[in-house]
Length: 499
Ligand SMILES: *[C@@H]1O[C@H](CO)[C@@H](O)[C@H](O)[C@H]1NC(C)=O
Image (tube, rainbow, N blue to C red; front, side):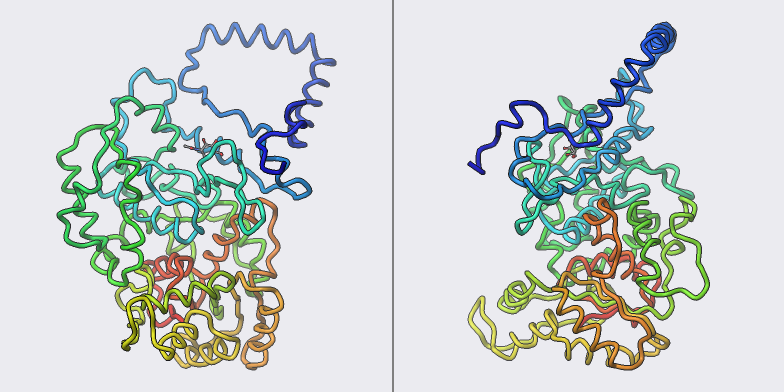
């Protein structure tokens, strides 16, 4: 029964969310008591409508989430938020001219429909950064898309380890600024403003130029970010169409092969780091507010500092997110990483491209004679130690990193982790027992509202980005997003370390 797509409750009527019910009741009240006023207002409105050209003002917003057949599946559980106000805000960006008769005056667009789906935020995020970077290099508007676990519009929720999570999160619930359609601050007025995917479909369906990824990639001879980017820049020189997309079935432009190669970012780094994709980057107001609310949890302040959410829109990335003196952040991936770390050892994996930027400490997979797809016991142990360290190993690594000049004055520790509460509490005790720290907290100690709960990884990234010293996991893309922002914002290489 549980697998059947619909149930009786749905046939009887929509099981609308409570705020929709309140909305309906409210409407009834208004209708009953203000019928006359309402009618008058309606007539005046219709008269005005006749006089005004309304075309550029009306925004087509999809009907708010209605009852889904899936609702019975999660019965008894509080359902995650769907962020509909963020979707609506994205659609109402001023550069979207929904009802314009022609769109010739608008920028040229680049859409990558085969972008990754169904992965954690770190994986998705590294690809979004490069897709936005490529669009910028091509002087085309970046077509931004949902952070998607599942495209199926009939499924608002996806199963994540038995718990419901939103199938799609609008990108603007996670980040803000030019990547999600905001103005380019400063001198970049010529850059094309990003547009939402839905708008792209409205403008471009029926007149898209679809490009073949393989045709561009077959002659590159490399999967490095600079080669791929240059290959597409060369290709797009010969393409004038306003609406350009990459063949959907061919997947992402930058894929796991690139992200998994430790050298892939090196040649592109300087250009990428200086591009507005990075220099104007900022987290969403939702995420910044989560940070502001948890500022004292992360590291107690002595003098109050202005909240992030009070800073002006055009404060650049580096100025917005400076180091918090005295803060040490550790990123410890647990859970699924137990198996993942073994797999990394079997394939002698290097650190990810985003974790091996020029100047950062290097990890070279140890050599040893083992058959293809296996590794020696010593090497496997080394991967386990660096990928899934025990509590004494974490303490030892913290001691080691503390020797660096750049690590002087550390007094607060924040542990970013998906680890079990009991493990995290033991680690906190061990770090406190080291003697030098005044305050030790973890992701588990933060206080988040319901909408923030499902974008909590982004708040953790913001914290990691601002640490005086950060120690991450070189195989983690969540670490990678932090490392990229720290390195681009001029943090000393000695302050960005790995277990
Ligand atoms: C993004 O997600 C929202 C909410 O599920 C959905 O209404 C919208 O159609 C999605 N956008 C695209 C372009 O699929």
